[in-house]
Image (cartoon, rainbow, N blue to C red; front, side, top):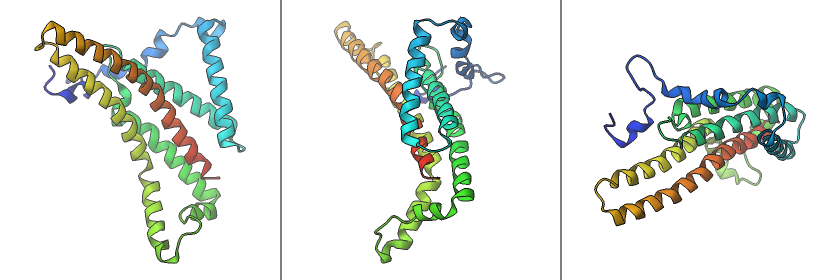
Length: 224
């Protein structure tokens, strides 16, 4: 039973077994095996999109580990986008709206990049803490600010993804709850508004996955 608006983002469906996390595996279960062995329209379009993204991130990163990094990035953007879109379907839990998922993705990536940068490029990592042209009086403050901003990066990545997923769902839920107390004319207006919001949510679901990966890519360029 829903006790408040945020109950829809509670992953626990019972006291013994949480079934909502199965939404993470639904895309792989529904994907036919022939997708991997025979070309079809869907697979051709998907490969073209992946190849375009590979070229974009390759130009953005432009260093020796590009091939491995772009493979990781494409896998993550596929995972995030599919789960964001799955969350728009009825009775399916939006896994990416939960901090357990978003922080699990952001924290290991950030920690790996920080360890790689500080171990292999220590001088450059120190240089990033103090931007060029900083007045001597502000140097200590800038180092403190840059240090704090680096530490909170995984948190901001997680909150950005989760908050954007939650916000749209809450608006749709609020409008849907008004349908039971409105007359037919107002219900028609509410339905049209929800259709517009649903269209925007489709765009947000794709954009948020892309933004998450772009920020990870930008963080990657700072450690080499």
